[in-house]
Length: 590
Image 1 (cartoon, rainbow, N blue to C red):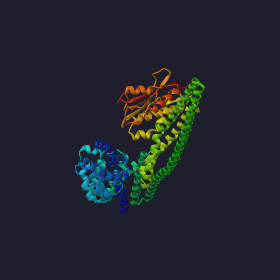
Image 2: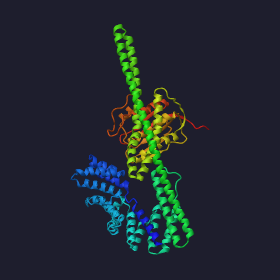
Image 3: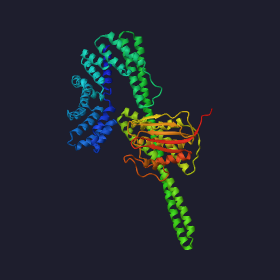
Image 4: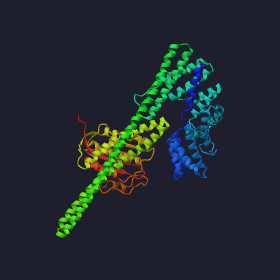
């Protein structure tokens, strides 16, 4: 009967080893600061970028390119070996990872993390004594070093090593130390199961069973959500289901050893139920992946078709332009011969005005396509390539993250294409423009939802406090275009860890102000006045590293004017920007 618990012990070992012992976000930020002086080195920057995004194959490729002609800079060579060794370890290429880690000098700032990696590899390969010799050095580091690694996970791994070596007192010491003051329920369940297995291996059944019961009782309190909305939630629920399955399975073996086979069967069925639930959710995600791949392909075809249509329209405009030029030449010659200079000049002026209007319409249409679809299309192209790479390597975790991101992009792009078509029709006076009473909060919430992936990617705090009782008179689709441009600009000109706020106010009688505020780069007063001017589009950029020519703001002003509204900007360089849209106000009936 103890053989069954040996299998459980191995499950515990796998769970402990698979914990994230690195606090990624803090470590990545520290590494970014360290390698700032080397931003001109392409292979170094690309290796770091893919390391932060956990694209291990790409890290290995660019690290190898750098190492083909390595510099004499030991500091940078250490980072390259660190990136490459970490990637090899994540791909389970342990022998190659060890060789890479051994090329790192002892003076490397993160050498203690290298020691931890080597210890975990020894643990995975069942070299328990070697793992202990490395991991025990990490139990008494300076406090500042624990901001990058999880001390509790190191203690847990040490407990596992000693338990597998049957040095139970030492194992008990490290297990108890690892979950001292533990508050996370999922972590606590794992710790209870570990200490229970330890006592059970020593035939101290009463204490072991008590811990198994604690783990099971805690697992029954873990709740699952009704719907999976993102990859983080899926990962959390995967852990919950694993712990529920493991706790129920442990209790089934306990009851089987106590000869209470009825209870053992019930617990075993419960464990199978949680296992089936986990498998079902995994299959749902896999099916969703296929559906989204088809959706991406279909959307790409729509984009290609729109590009072909735009090319045809451009050809038509060129033909018209050449015809107009020929007509102007003919009229000029006729005017010369018939001395109808005044009449000819009027015709030429009228033709020029027509051509200017056509060119203006063409420029606006192209500006919308480039301004609004550029980010979505590029994101879909690059994400689809990464998706195919990860599908080939069966990297399920990365696939889940990419699929969720692609779903958000595709949904946003679909609505965006529809809005762009309506806008183009409006410019050619074929669009039905309807100003009606609109609930401002619902529109802002709907538009902002499509930007959540970009906000998360840039680590921006977002807050929508528009009053739910605010109603305005506006055309819904054109108002969405205004909001998309303002939010897009706010994200573009914001630094990581900044904030973006959307809120409403009532400072102008008869109008409701909708304000999009960011903590970004801001602008000078001269630039602000140019943006508010109804003249030609801006060519000079306030910030040379930010892409943009002011086309979006011109579109915003045009749409606000169509809605009988007003537009204003408040900004200072380095202190953020407020984009203020004032729309005719209406009140809630009753």
